[in-house]
Length: 216
Ligand code: AP5
Ligand code: MG
Ligand code: ZN
Image 1: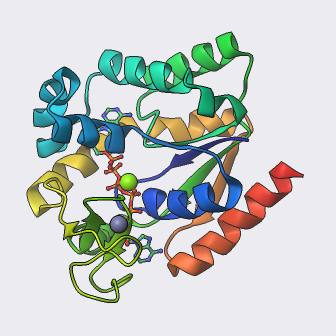
Image 2 (image 1 turned 135 degrees about the horizontal axis):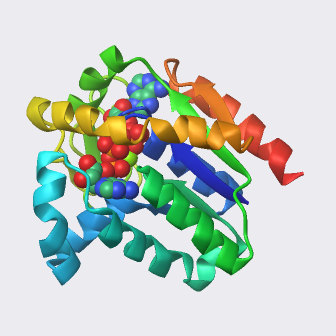
Image 3 (image 1 turned 90 degrees about the vertical axis):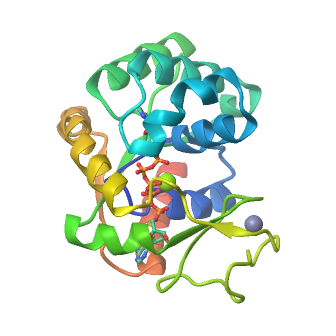
């Protein structure tokens, strides 16, 4: 199963991705997570991208495409994958088409998690992420049992440096480059819109239903 998640920052891509990976067993490929891991490890890639992530601007296409190409060639991606946060520009979408074509693969579905922009600031500024396992929480909408501690691994929860009001407004501006992808995948009959302005469980019920049908 080859699945892609599309949606504004804070739409719930990472939150649904956790459930998809757990239920359907396909690897979660998040360019944002990969960049954050590189920054934390201080690799050359991390040094190259850190100022983009901190401010909320998009990393240049060439860098991003190279990272995804390498990741899709890893053995675990041969039986399927879940793309989260990639592609985000038309050149990235075109590069992905070419790459999948070379690999003899095709996307099964693009899940477009649709939310109005007004709900995003509250979602992003209240988000907390586990330092150890990457699980996502929210201080109001999805609180952990013990404040600041991950339910799954007891790791420490932190706030992403790009979840400040200033960086969020830059990320929303940058999303203009991603908007044309809705039409791009509509034209290819791959887009399925999901209403993301409901509870996490209600969104998940829709997402799971769509993927179960594809799997059959
Ligand atoms: P990335 O990490 O992809 O961030 P993003 O696109 O801004 O998306 P988010 O992770 O913020 O949102 P999400 O949809 O995953 O929401 P979540 O599920 O966590 O990218 C970060 C940066 O990396 C970019 O700014 C850029 O610099 C760079 N980058 C990455 N990919 C790139 C690319 N392809 N090209 C160039 N640059 C790239 O949910 C948010 C919060 O809301 C959580 O607290 C959650 O608990 C809560 N929540 C979720 N669902 C609900 C719900 N239904 N109801 C209530 N609360 C909810
Ligand atoms: Mg995310
Ligand atoms: Zn954890």
